[in-house]
Image (cartoon, rainbow, N blue to C red; front, side, top):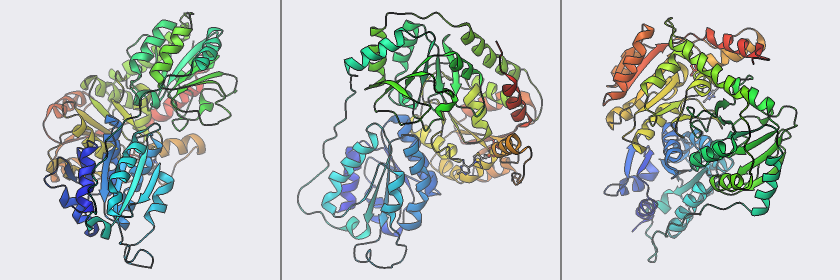
Length: 547
Ligand SMILES: Cc1ncc(C[n+]2csc(CCOP(=O)(O)OP(=O)(O)O)c2C)c(N)n1
């Protein structure tokens, strides 16, 4: 057996179902060794897309997704998804070839120091030095990637190592998983004391809570103590938005409705919140809140996030332990109901608005009507992310995915393909701006060829809309943001996908429903009226005492 064959056996041993990638001259042994294995190789059209596919598979399943590329340029193309996975605390393994040891010490064709390039954007990056190292290094890669706090791991396999025969009788190592931990009782007691004397506590649920499935514990905790719960963008759905104590999301660039709940609070119970998700100054501008930090690991230091007590362990166990130690039930705050009313009102107004181009609130409302609670929407980075994150009611964790660590553009289309592979029974929608769509639209070919149905909804404005919004807000004018688009319907059809153009507001919902039920790849382009962007920030800016 050679190292490439051993690598495939080790990936099978880890339960890997898919490898996303493009082969190169230096990893042909690995790619051909996948033939006859239980792993499906998904051939893509850009390594960046392969990295996003691996990331989203990892985010949805908790098991590291795997992408693969050749050395040099192929490996470098993987870097955006790798960095995205690490900053989004998502398990992922990136594999690439590397030049052989017979030329790695000198200037040679396509040779760059890949391990050094990957080190700052991974939890672990290394070169496989011998064929015999494969079982230990693969086991370690998965263990490091999947253990809290998850992230990406990179392994480089030199071309001569890949084809070398293995000495000895080593095989894949048994998989062991790190078990959830109970918080320390003394921490629970201190946190309970801080909470019991609070006047108006509030809960913030972050990505770390969604990742470990803390939804049921959050609902128990909130109901027992009578607390309102807001989530970060990344954690949307971990507290169901149709629950009467749900406050919606925080993380928008301006003081949004849920922020008023934090203004009133004296204690914030942060569950799985990671500071990369948004600046804690948004919820603790005056640095006067008491912060209880419930997570698997200690919090990052930030002057706006002064942790009074940290409960380190599995967030569900910490929530249950804390609820058991606090006998108090807090009275509902009337401001919380008002906050919920404002978001619902905005969405209702959108639902009834028939103007063309469509206002963002109308598009959000129609997406919600078209999607079942467990269907998955991936929202790309741009103005659409702001609208969807603020307003899209989400009922289950990991059913509305944004990138909020690196906040990269162009992950949603390849990500939708991976989401459909991970959950074939759910319907999948990628929501994207026209800028982001053209950054990875080549993967329509992959999806059509591999028969992976999903829908892309383009919010078309002929512009990098979020950047225009920011320029207008901060500079009072904009420049260098407009571009021209191809005919997206004809473009989609040239790939063998189905294309739709929305011409009237009333067309969007039936078109979405039809496309989501169709067993094919569909692209819907919908004109959007981003004049609403400034209207929103002006309205929120004026909202100083809405209650
Ligand atoms: C890869 C990448 N490049 C640039 C940016 C900066 N950026 C964030 S949003 C945005 C504009 C997005 O435009 P579009 O996809 O058309 O969506 P819109 O804002 O118009 O809805 C840009 C350029 C980024 N986040 N990621």
